[in-house]
Length: 191
Image (cartoon, rainbow, N blue to C red; front, side, top):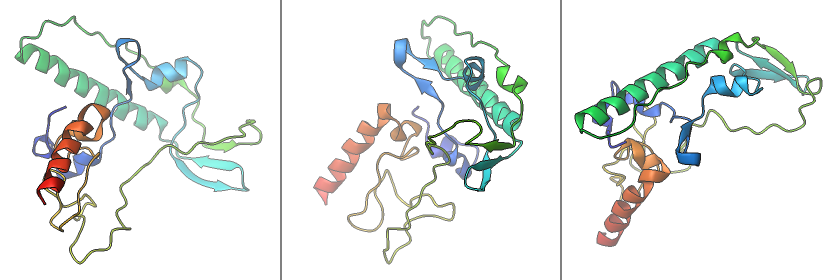
């Protein structure tokens, strides 16, 4: 959680999503395959809508699941290496090997009416948009990430907080945002 942008394989990696995890009951991962096992219908990316209620979905669910599985394995490996390198006495973690999502039927067209879906909550695909900030200096770099040092922009009075990789991965998570907010509050007080 203390990794910085310098630890990433490329600057674009800072746009990768955060893991689906929960602190409930001591902490657990929110595995997409477990969702499928529990009856959640997993879908590919939304490509469009027609006739007001028909969703057109990409046939990319297996690719998305493979990326999520690879990410989980990578993160678990990093945690395990950290435990060993720091001599931490921790019980071994064995992640369940689930494949239920891969067995799901690929749905590429879905009628909300036929499926009796009456409510849709759009909570996906978030991206940064700093278009509202109009200043004489550039606010973002070529990738669309804020130009800043530890959350402090070059433009006097402009600060960023609550985003991952400012300066650490955890800076955009509840467990780390306080550290970043404290630094920004100190910088504001100094100016």
